[in-house]
Every structure is written in structure tokens, then in C-alpha cells.
Length: 103
Image 1 (cartoon, rainbow, N blue to C red):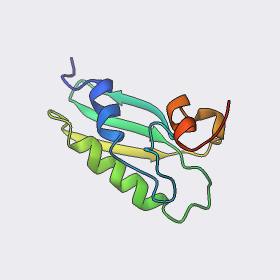
Image 2: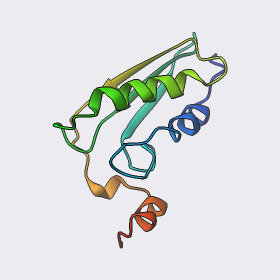
Image 3: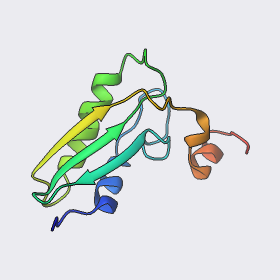
């Protein structure tokens, strides 16, 4: 049974930002899934706002580093996927308000 929780990982990932947008990657809806195996190895599936994002590697590396700060996490693997494609409907209501977007 893992000792690390999804909630802990999501909280750590909220410290990771897309450098072009002043909102964390969780509230932007870039995190598609977090799984933790029985050995406390964390698997994060995420996307980016566009496939051509020049910061893709940096954001994925930062997400890995932030998730590794979770106490008990043995290792972290981040997979960037493009399907389903990200769209603004994935942004949290709080982030939409911060960005001046209206529902």
C-alpha cells in the first residue's frame, strides 16, 4: 500500500508554473492523471497548452522535481501526452478568474 497520496502530489505540482502564464499547471488543467504504485513510485501524466511549446521539457522536469519533494516518493516519472489535446475548458474556475476569463 503506498504511503504517498494523490493529494500530496497535486499539492506539490501546484508549485510548478508555465512560465508564460501566471497559473500553476494543476489549475491550468495540464495534469491528466497521477498514479502511485505500491513502492511509492509516482507516475504523472500531463500535457501542455500547445504541442509546439518551447518550454515543454523544462515544465516536465520541474513537475518531476516538485513531485519528488513529496515525503515518501521513491521516484517520479512524468509522461507528456497530446491526446486528448488541452483546451481552456480544463482551467479551474479560480484560475479563469485570475486570468480574467469568464465562464
